[in-house]
Each structure stands twice: as C-alpha cells, then as structure tokens.
Image (cartoon, rainbow, N blue to C red; front, side, top):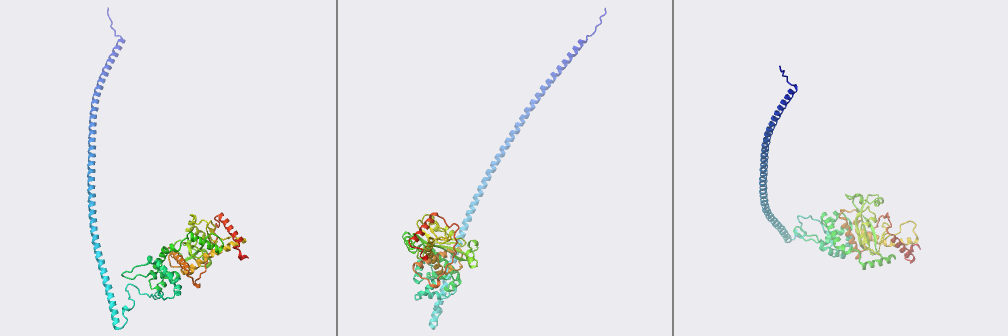
Length: 505
C-alpha cells in the first residue's frame, strides 16, 4: 500500500508565525540591549558634562572674587592718594597764608614809615611857612610897612572868601533889630539855639584848617531857611563854599530835629492839656478842644520818581502852572505852637487821607484821645475825636452859629501856618533840597517856629503871608453817628446859652 504524505497548510502557517514571533522577540531583545547600552553611555556623558560645568562655575567664582579683591585694593590706594593730596594742599595753604601775613606786615611797616615821613614833611613845610610869615611881618614892622602877617594869612588849600558881612553881624554891638531881620529872631534866642546845639554840631580844628564855629554854622542854616536864597548867594554871604553851606544846612536841621524837637515839639501832658482846653473854650465856648488842625502844601521841584503822586491838581488849576508839592499837617495850641506834625506825604493826597496815615490817627486809635476834640476844616471827616463844621447846603441858624464859633478855632491853626511860612521864606517857593531831605528841613522849621512863638518873637508886618490851600470835602464825610449827635448837642448849647449866633443879630 502506497502512502501519499501530504503537508497540512495550517501547520505550515503556525510554524511561520512562530518563527516570525521568535525573530521579533530576538530583535526586540537586541534593541533593548542596545538601548540600555546607549543609556549607559548617555549617563556617563551627562555626569562628565556636570563635572565640567561645576569646574567652570568654580573658575568664574574665583575670577569674580579676585576682581572684587582688586577693586578693594584700588579703592584703598585711591583713598590713600586723596588723603595725601589733601594734606599737601593744607600744608601749601598754610604756607601761603603765612607768606601773605608776613608780606602784609611788611607793607604795613612800609606804609607807617611813609605816613610818618609825610607828616614830618608836612610839619616841616608848615613850620617853614609860619617862619616865613613871621619873618616877613617882622621885616614889615621894622620898615614901617604893613607886613604879610598884618592881615589874614592866605592858606594855599583854602579859597579866600570874604566873611565881612557875618563878622559884622557877629559883633556884640550889632543892632538887635537888624539881626532879627536877617535871622527872624533876636540875639538872645539865637544864642539859646547855639547853646542847645553846641554838643551836636561843634567840630574840632584840624592840621589843615580851623573848624567853622558853631554860631556861624547855625547862622548859615537860619539864613538859608529865612530867605530861601540859592546856595551860591549863601556862599557869598558867609564866605564859605557852596557844598559846605549845603552840608551845614542839613547838619544843623538834623541836629534841630534830633536835639530840640523832643523838647519843643511834643504832645502836651495832662496838666498842659487841661489848660489848653480852658483857653480854647474861652475862645469859642466849645468844651474839650485839645487842638486846632490844618494841612498846608509846600511846593517842590518835580521829582524823578512817582511824579503823579506829587502832582497838585488844585494848585495847578488855580495858578495855571504845573505844581508839585508835599503836605504838612499840624495841630497847634491856642498860642499857635505846634503839638504834632505830620510831614512828607505827596501833594495829590487829600486832607482826610493824610490824617488817616498820620501818627495822630494812630494815637487816637490807641485810645489816647478819648473825650477830647481836635478841630479841623471841611477837608476832614467828622469822627469821634475830630470836630468839623457843617458842610451841607441850607444850614439852619443853629448850624451857622456853630460854624462861626468853630471857625474861630480853625483860624488859630491857619494863622500859625501863615506865620510859619512867613517867617521861613524857604517854604514859599520850590527849594533846592532833595525830596528825601525835605522832611528834616520842614521839621526843623516847625521846631524853630515853636521856639520863636514861646519866646514871643514878633514878626515884621512885611513878612505876613496869606495862606491859599484848597479844601475838598471827603467822600465819606461822616465816620461816626455818635459824633454827629455830639456835634448837634454842642451847636444847640452854643446857641441857646447865647455863646454863638451874634453875627446874625
């Protein structure tokens, strides 16, 4: 029997799959082994890289530390150099200061020696001049001729000017009436002023020239104020230089204001104020009047600054000539003696504004003028302490009577200012005195006026001056209701007690 062996297809497929699986397993195992080897190789390389990186970082740290150490060494060296330079600079400065100090002492010694030489030479020259003058005088006397020394010695550094007029006025036998015409006061009053000012204006003689006597200094100032003459005429009159005369006027006026004003121009004390009230009440019948107030204008040359402020519109319109002025406000007692002055405000200011800026208003605000009246004109406002006339139209009989009596008090101040300007002619015309010096000069005039009034120095009739000052009613004429009632009560009492209104009867 013949066997036919045939292969099963299914068995062949299983064998093939098995072989494929076995091959795949071997391949995978090989790949895994290769991967492990690669990982081993990669791990060894990373560790090597880490070791290299740590080395680099350590090197950088060492370099940075070395750099910091170098910077510290450099800074230390720089500080040492700076300290050395500063010490060297100080030593040099010290040496230079010592050098300049020695040099200055050397120069001072040289200057002192030169000064001594000049003084010796000047003394020798003066001695030679005096010796020559004495010898010339002796020669003249021997020959029977007037010598060089018989008259005034002509000094080389002083211009020869004639003082004949003043020398004549200064003589004891010079008539008092003529002296009074020249200086607006008698010899006794003049001597009093000279005695009062002696310590303030007296000067000592120097090597070059003799000092101007006190009497001549006072005379220059009074003549200038009394006549208002230009300085060149004053210079010729007293035999002095123009600049010297100007300086003397300012010095004497300043001394009068400093020395004499506290004594002769002060607000009265209580006892004197009581006497003033009684005298004013005797004049007008109005009680508690402590003073009569007035404001006048002094002409000036147009100033270089603030021209509009000093422009006097009312004087310009009246005189048809541009006028500039400053104001003088004064309060006087029944004799016309100033008790308070306010000097120097611009001429464009009305009377009420000058009053507001004055020390008198400040004194009143401080309560020092309670229960007293200061009588003023229509240019002032009615206040608790300022009594003024009625200014409205269609006045009653009572108001007319009051204005009549208050006008008598006003005239006291007007007459005092008229005598002030008449006695000191420099107040009537524009002066050469600078604007900043003018209050000192005007204050001196007021003080001198008081001295003349207190010593009963009468004025010559030809010196009388007529005041022309425009009064403007202030915009706010009533500043106190109580003062209006007080004024009405005073007017009522004056009329019904027969103390006013006589001009209407």
